Amino acid sequence: MENKVPTPNFSSENSEVEYFKYAPVSKWDFESFKKHMMKKRLKPNPVVIYTKYKHCLHMLTRFSDLSENKMQSVKGLIENCKILLPQEQPQQQRSPETNYYNYGTVGFQGKMNGGTISVIPSKRVLEETEEGHVEIPRPDQRSESPESLPSDEPEPTTFLTDTTDESFKVTEPSSNYGELLKQRQYILELNEFDDISLTSKVSARNMDNELSLDERLLLSSISYYDNCPVEILLQPYAFSDQTYIEIRKWRRNTFHLNLHQMIPPTEEDIFQRNLGVFLVNLTETLNRLPLISNNKQFEIDYSVQNISILLRFVFNSKSKVNIAWEKPSITNQDTSGKTVTHDFLIYSNHQELGCGEIKVNGVGERLQEEGRARLGERLKKQLHRRIKEAKSRRELYVFGVFITDNIMELYRSSFSKENGYDLVLLSKIMLPTLGSTYTSIEESLEVLFSFKESIINTMQDPSECERPYIYREYYNYLKPTVSFI
Image 1 (cartoon, rainbow, N blue to C red):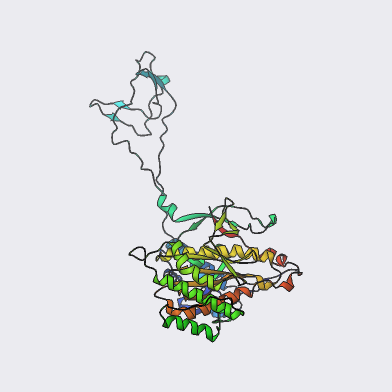
Image 2: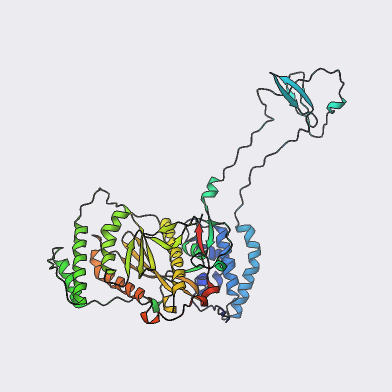
């Protein structure tokens, strides 16, 4: 059965042409587009921006709902692109040329210090003048060959000297080390399925290290959305009144909470017990004296003290979804075949449902973007494994968490025949386990429990165990993922 992807239209959500959707036609020229793109890049590359601009123009010509006037403007801009590239493309650095002089074949041979020296006089002759200097004739001045010289001429003197004059210039070797640091080599892999026909030819490619997050993810055919659509926006999870009472009581008592450990008979009591344990652990974390004066923590210490206590409460042992720390992923291998270790995995019933990345101590924006891109690429590989084991379309989702200092970003990665791979930022909340953020504990817990419910809703239902796998429906739509070498 042939499945065709519907033609995109201008009114639909499309991140690549988002600029043209909201900007007036008068701002569709390359200079306006370049100014817009430079705001999102630390070190903008004009060639990359030009390529993306040209790609967007060609995409606009395929939109069915674009007005005739706008279509004429787009075609005119495409014609102008032919003269833009020579002006915008930076001049390539000229590589130094090395001139090799041909001194002809071996002519005379003489002895010097017990060794044999070959002299080549056929194309370039060095003669000694009256002043004792060496003259180098022009290339069009040819001297006689050795065979035409008189045979009784004494053994010639060598032109080898211990010093050189201004006629000898050493060419400085060039260094492209700086250029190499601007690029990385990668290959595209699709190894998550035990199917040889899906394995594409592996060829190394170069990637600009200055690519933005959405451009980096597009290498793996992933569309990135930092604005979550309303229909999938996480709604706050509704706790019982007793939960809010316990939190307020804990806050009023300034961390002095009397808890009675007992085996509760109901799920609500179990939840209240877990909440009490979490609040006690949070109290210990907030009251702990810093080890060093600058308040910086190592990533492992930060994860144990501030992150694990929160995730252990949300994804507790009674939950259908759990967390595994520093766990190698069976869906993610490097080019040598070794499994890659994640900061933490989200899993259930031995199936990976997502993963998480942690960045601490105020790392730069560039490293944060690198971590987000790596998270999106790893989620895509986990998504391939879910597709392989899926029996309904409800399972074609994986979820990610990106934590940087006191911010938690919650992501959802999905796949469909119509839209391909999507990575959506569902919500951005405070990490409520710090002395500066614990007042937002209710809001953060509401969103986190809603996030957990979203994960549970994508899990396979026991009644579907007899259904056939749906992997073959998506066989021709799967795309490889970036893997660095």
